Image (cartoon, rainbow, N blue to C red; front, side, top):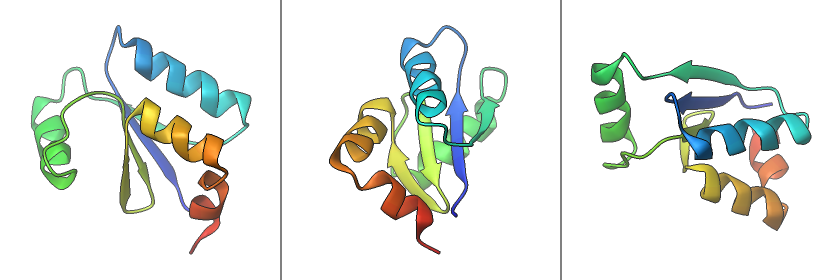
Length: 86
């Protein structure tokens, strides 16, 4: 199973919604709050093709997007296929 990594910031309703969805579907994930890590946020933004909003979701080495992208992947039924890919 590929690792789900979630990058968040404080006072972010989309970050909160993402974490609620992850708990609802019982999907383990790691979280890193980037509030006080501007250099790391900039590095991740470059890796994600300039994406700047929070949250940022990665499955393995693949950048997925934010909350709405992750939710769409879940609703389409493709999420667990992507996570279970090695």
